[in-house]
Structures are given as structure tokens and as C-alpha cells.
Image 1 (spheres, rainbow, N blue to C red):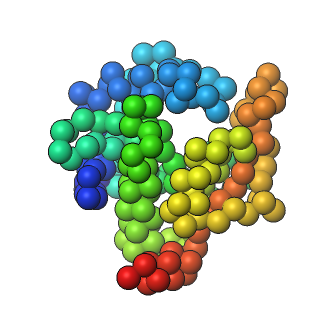
Image 2: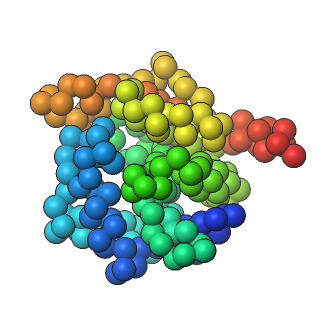
Image 3: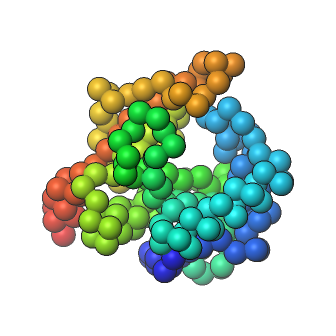
Length: 190
């Protein structure tokens, strides 16, 4: 992938130096509070390799987010196909993120998400970008709202890959933004 620069961040492909951070964010109880699993180091390494390959092949995916001034990787933000989510239409593109807790509350996710929305609508020519999170995950849904996405309660769902052993994680709130909505918001911000 071609790196994307924002005011404070570089969104780029994964590098070997990112492995420890990637494992940490995929095994940390605070980061993974709304997920029914934690990844051990081998599982995290395999998932990071998968993310890297996807970025190499598609030019988009779950990209590493690096603070430009320090070179420190803080987590990931990106766009991804939802083809493995059974009820979503083929070709649906989701925006999502995961950061180490010490980087929460600094606006990094919103900054990176806005850059990815611009990439999705201007470069990929997408008609809609979606996002979803466990309904109780107010941190994530607040970011969705900050970047101009709107709740679409008619599309809320129980996630089919969340096991019955975690009923509190099944219900997901659905958000979306269309290319027209994004262009209108961009114009209004000028």
C-alpha cells in the first residue's frame, strides 16, 4: 500500500518492528473488552501477516497507524471487506480501528478514519462505508459519530460469529456514511 499521511500520523503497511505492539493490542483486556477472544503471540503474528498480505494485494486493509513525529506504531485503522460477515452484501467495505490504550483520547482514530474515508470515497469510488460495534462500545460509536457516520438502527444486528457464551457481545450497532453525505460534510467544513 502507498502510505497515507495525516497531520500527525502515517498509515502504512505492517513492519517487523510492529509485532510486539500488534500482539499487545490483540491480547489486552481493555482493548479487547468487546471481543470474545484474545490472541496469543503466535496467533497475533499470523493475523499481522494476514493484514500485511491484504494491504500488499489490495492497497487497503487494516493498516498500521504510526505517529509521524516519533515513528511509534500505536495500533491500526483501515478499511476492510466484510465478505466474511454472512449477511452483508458482497463488496461492502467497513472502517475500523484498534489502538493501544495509552493513545486513546488524543483524536488519533478520528484523524486516521477521516483520511480513510477520503481514500474510500475519492480513490476507491465507494458509494458507502459502514462500521459496526458492540452496542455497549460507546468509545467506538462516538468515533463513528465524530467522523460523520450516522446510526442506522434498522440495520443493527446480532453478530453471527460471537459465541453464545458471550451474549453481552452479540448485539451490534450499525453506522454508515454515503459518498454523497461525506461530500456534503466536506463541503460544509470549508
